[in-house]
Image (cartoon, rainbow, N blue to C red; front, side, top):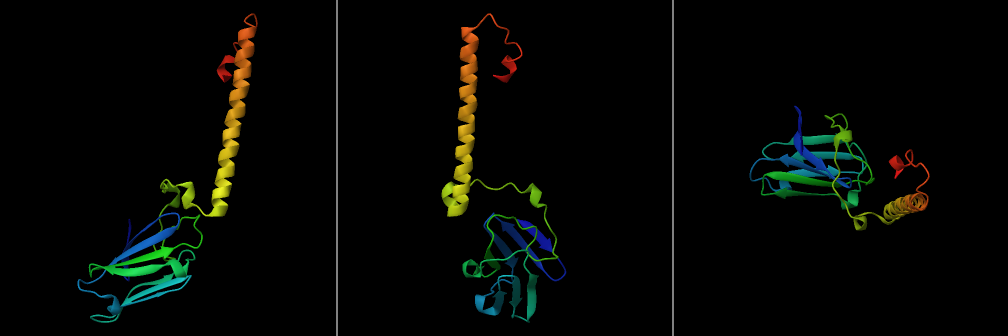
Length: 166
């Protein structure tokens, strides 16, 4: 989880390649009806109305979200958990709200995923790449086998420069 502490907002967030999860600690006993969560494809505004009206987080999102798949809930009456489903499931976010502290997305180590987790188009592309890689390995192995066989049949020839390539 990445912690963000600003004068106007304090929250933790984490992400996968497909979604972003935000956790905001709220006063113990907070119920969903005392919160106002306004989400659009590009913006997020979270406000608590008890004991007084206070904006907890507000601003334009780093990237676009799929609003229909994004949700929020109050857990144990002390944590607001917001789940944002990314519109582009092939990119990392450097922050949640534009202008808030960024993370180095180059240092993110993605979790292992299964081909079945990918959308059809992405899966087809990955399967094609895997097949091409497999064929390349097979072709390389065939060349090595032919060369080794040739070397066995012709021990009188000098293959000292070739041995490093086998």
